[in-house]
Structure formats: C-alpha cells, structure tokens
Length: 248
Ligand code: APR
Image: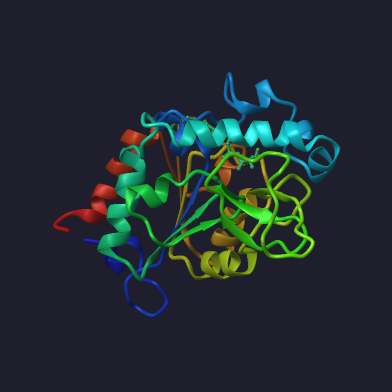
C-alpha cells in the first residue's frame, strides 16, 4: 500500500504527495524519438531552425512541417502508451488526490494511458495557439500557411502549441508549488539538460522530498537524486511502482 510509512510520512500524516517528472525517454518504447539519444530529433534537425520563435517568423513552413511530421507519427496506430505510462495511470487511479505528472513531453500518451493530473510544461503537439492572443485550441488538421485563428479579427496566424527555446514554460507556478509539497519526486526518462525542468529535483530536495531517478542511463543531474534505478522505463517504472500498488 502507498502509505506514509513507505515514503516517510508527509507533513500532515495523510497520503504522501507524489510528483512525477517525465521526459522523452518514457515515450521512446512507444516509438517516439527522444531528442539527445542516437538518431534523436536534434540530430536530424537543428533546433534553431524548428524550435525557436525566430525560426517560426523566419520560416513558418519549415516549422509547420517539423511539427506536422511529429503529429502524424503520434497519431499513427502503432504509437501507443507503454507499460510505464500505464503504471503511472494506475498509481493515479489508486491515489487520485496525491499523484501529479509534470511532463516535458508534448505527446498525449499519459492521457491515453488514463492519467488525468498531467501538466504539459512544454506544450502539446495536438493543439495550436493563436500567435496574437495565445488562445489555445485542438488542431484537427495539419498546420499550413492558411491556418488562421478564429479568435481575432483580422484573424492571425496560428502556431504549434509548443514552448520553444527562449520561451517560458507553462504552469510554472503550479509546478513549483507541487514540487515544494511533494513527499516523493520521481524523474523518469529525461536527460536533465533543459531548465527549469532539470532544476525541479533541487527544489524537491530542498523541501525534503524523497527523490528518485528512473532512467535508461544516469542523467546530467543524477547526483541530485537520493535513489536511482536504471533500465528501460517499461520495466523499471512498473517494477518501482509495484511496491505502492500492492493490493490496489
Ligand atoms: N527508458 C528510460 N529512459 C530512456 C529510454 C527508455 N526506453 N530511452 C531513452 N531514455 C532516456 C535517455 O537516457 C535520456 O536520459 O531518456 C532521456 C532522453 O533525454 P532527451 O532526449 O534529452 O529528452 P528530454 O530530457 O525529455 O529533453 C528535455 O529538451 O529539446 C527539449 O523540449 C525538449 O522536452 C524536451 C527537453
């Protein structure tokens, strides 16, 4: 059972709060490329050409093409949540008040696995944003030069709902509060290269959480974690969470 004695009781003696940070590595076994592994996305594309506001104003068609490719791949039948996504959804359904996923990923695999408390700090592939009002909406068809928002007049161009390099991530206040309240902070499938996501473990440590890294290989920040288990997420995550799901 997930109970205070397993984790070290949370401040109010209730069920401990578990905050999970995920990165591209949790979706690798679902068939989505990571960024910095071999044949990762940043080997195929210079991020300055497809993942910055300057790139979008300089060559929107190239940026549209990059995200259309990733959207198409995400929506193909062979991309499904894997055992790691499913184990996290099971943990949340067992303890709905105490589990939050903060993800750097822009795919919807956590939601498709059944997770509901998910914050996408780098945006989402399947939605779009008005370049003027920043209003967000689901984008059903591929981006193209004629894509216009319906919220402004005259209507403005729309952009992928992605946080690009040099832009502020979403939900940062809520994220920092949740990490400060966490009794357990579990980082899964991230290389720890990109801030502020990579700095969350230090906040968790500072506020006394039990910090755990579950990854294929030690991340940049691996020394900041009190506990670590290495291997494929689809094996390591379900195994690690079993101790809390027993009898659930
Ligand atoms: N199981 C577990 N971990 C894995 C697996 C796997 N099957 N495959 C890869 N990994 C690990 C790698 O060891 C690496 O530490 O996942 C991590 C992937 O690192 P990155 O490719 O850097 O992805 P991520 O950390 O999510 O990148 C963060 O950088 O480019 C930006 O916005 C982008 O959100 C992204 C951010």
